[in-house]
Image (cartoon, rainbow, N blue to C red; front, top):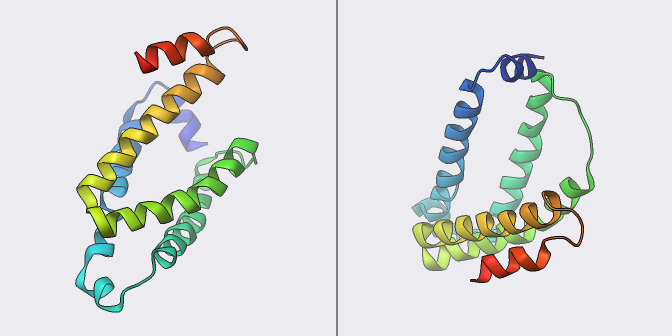
Amino acid sequence: MILYDAVAGGSDSIGWIAAFIGCLGFGSFAVPMKGEAANSVDVDPLVFQTYKTAMSFITCWFVLLLGVEFQYTPIGIISGLLWVPAGTVGIYGVRNAGIAVCVGTWSGVTVLVRMCIISTFVCCPPGDCLGRHMYYFLK
């Protein structure tokens, strides 16, 4: 239980390391799509998404070595089902609009959507604050 011991002991280092790796990975995964090798063979965006999905599936099991308990959640399955079409559209966007525009746009949209979902459905009692959150979000 390496991860649990580090977090329970008050260490923030694992969180900072994970955030740094996430920033590098999220900002640089699209770079190979713009390379000459990929452009010369005109690889379909669904093929790139298949590579991303396969590598994510292979590497996601490594957290079990850190003592994280294996579990399925409905939101995880829904997220996985939405990730493939969203990633494919993102790859089309990188090809047509460029990395900076596309990654900047979907990062902002991701933050806004997650903020709305979490603040509305997770942090508030049912029926208490949906209208209030939508008012402040759209204001």
